[in-house]
Length: 477
Image (tube, helix red, strand yellow):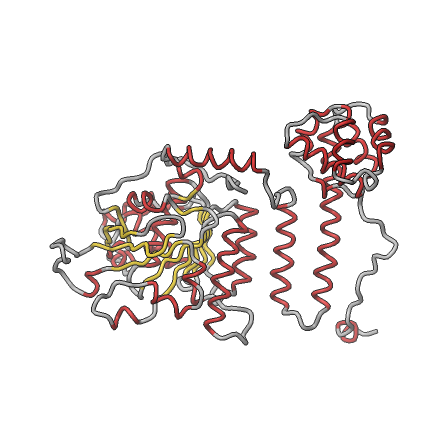
């Protein structure tokens, strides 16, 4: 057969008939036997495995009973497990008292329980990979499935196996209450940063408690209000002050343009003079030090244009695995493409906003998405943005946990004062228009346009504990 005919031949499905799924039944028996003769061994086992890790259905039932007794802090031995199985009507399914006796009699010691648990965990992961590969293969052979959706599905399933095979979908109330009380005590002591990414702006952090993990935060404004500048300030604070890795998907500006903004903002350098080669000797002398600092910060910029939401999600998952990112920023939402070209733009934006919210929950980190407002504020006497200005963009308002508007009164009225007689020049209103888990309010910041930089209005006040590192897990996960 020639090369061309080979290339056009439809591949056949893999035939796994006759092949046994990976398992280690004898090791599973050794684990259960060890726990039956030494109930304290369960504490080590539950940190590594769960009932579904076992291949034999009898072993799944027995270990589930053991886990239940451990959670209730009841005694764990041959008799207590047998009684629990009887109460649940699962004595026969689990093999009966004779099988429990066999497991107990064959056990020698619990000394190797951790290594045994790792063995059956590895077999369980292999089985998950085999099953997932089969599901992906079925979808790939289905001509009605969109290839990009299959790719996203495949990446998500592999990510779940990599990161989530030990993560439970439920939590015992005893553990949940303990974590809730720990959280309340922590935030009461003003250490909310354990569960959030600080914004770097004192009053905004007082209002929001930082950007909470799993939150979708929308930062919206009309063009030229400073959306990207504010986002860069948030990124800079997270990565530079708190060493939190951040992924920045820039669909509008190139990496070079962003780096110039970073440098000018960090050094309070006039961006126009830097871009046109008119910087003073004093300003030029600052550049090497700023560049050296920026080389070490954990910021990962992706400036590929016209990305789909599936591509962004896949890249974010990979960065979470490889770099342990603590925040994702997307600039900006309306530039993201949907793989389904048949959808209306409103439905497309709705799908994108829901996907960003799902990404925040999946990665257990805040996702910040910049958004362009419609022209409604321009037509009103009061130019301040309203939530209704987002409604033409599908479900953005509904999906967002926090909606932040940027309003700069001096953009529309040069010089002058506000209704209270305060000078408006260089003052930006950061309007928290929606806050799912707290109050809404306005925060005033100083905006220095020539530096593309926002600052606390009362001066550069950095939050304490700037060596904070974002923890790996949510307290309620």
